Image (cartoon, rainbow, N blue to C red; front, side, top):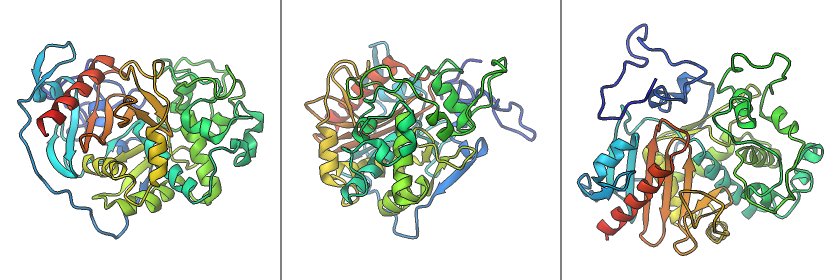
Length: 398
């Protein structure tokens, strides 16, 4: 079934009692089901709370501009309005903070200010930010071998890799990130995390991993020397999270709660999806509200705001850039679980498949959050059009 835009008639997915259209377990993240599912993860798979605590809610002052009619380009390079582009790119929520104030905010597709939305791989940047905190305290040292923290990995492809290489996705571990292949390594992650059942028609003799740790222990091959090249592989973030759990003696949702979410002034508690062993899916299972994602971005923009060490953020912004990182960021880079837009602006991105984005722009003192439910895992044209629209917004708000 094809998907639908916000301006199209909406099919009755999970509406009525009993629901007229029930989301299939095998395809909840595929179109059109993801248009409902990304806002209802707690109804699909097990989750664990990332508690916001009893503290203050950081106010987001409002200095709003009506940018609906702002002239931008659509994904084909044709003239369009910002409102039309947000519709074209299956937007669920869009928010711009300028100098810490809400300049523009829109909700679509049934989303509202309290809705938790799946982050996909923006979760990696949340995990990387916590790693910066632990490194600042001396609990982890990125220069040390990852096996110093997880000796069990001595029998895997991570033997000889440093924790920094895990953070930067430059280990040589063989891992296929082929999203459309249900039996690839990332397809096995879907099963190991409990996101998906074993695909029908699979080889009955294949032993599917019961949880993420079992999958990690089974990755024994390398394809290049550690540190030789960047290759995007989600499993690196899960290895990082296991290191953080080992050194703190706490589970990831508790670490994120104590180190970031309780200090952020979040509106709502967040949550992680968890696998059969209770492990939170660090590589993509984080869920939060539109405004709380913006608060996270603003904290990074404020050089850590006393939460994440300033020097960790500076080191992240100084990561290597160039070709070979991302089609939609031709001058981009990757460092400490964040994307870098280009070597001049050194803006940071948190990015996830199906159109999730937090862009953190120091030059314009601006944070932009876009939560989406694209029909495809990736769409370079959508990503480029969104980036250009953010540039137009920055110009309009100067």
